[in-house]
Image 1: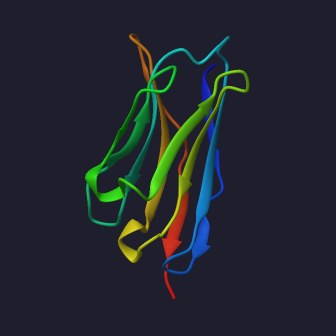
Image 2 (image 1 turned 180 degrees about the horizontal axis):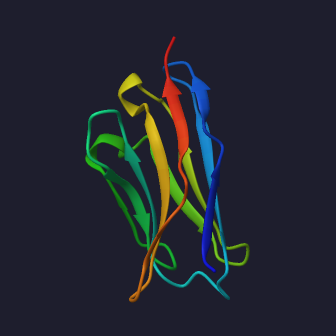
Length: 115
C-alpha cells in the first residue's frame, strides 16, 4: 500500500525558514513525479512545486526564489526548503506522488507564518 507521510511543519515568524519532508513507502522506487501542494482556508489546493525524477523542477510564481524542492530517490523522500516565509504562505502542505495509474496524497502538515 502506497503511503506518503509529511513532517516538518510548524509555526514560524515572517522571514523564517522551514524544511518539509515527505517519506514515500509501499513502492520499490519513486520514479514518477512528486510534488508539494498547499491549501489555505477558504481557498483551493494549489501546486507549490513539483519535481520529476532527476532535476527537472516547476515552481509556482509566488514561491520562486524562496522555496526549493528536492528528492532523495534512494530514501524515497521528498523535501521542500522554504525560506523568507510570508504570512500568505500559511496553509496545509500536502505531498503528492503521481503515477500513470493513481494519484497519491499525504495527510498534510500545517505551516503557519505569523508574528
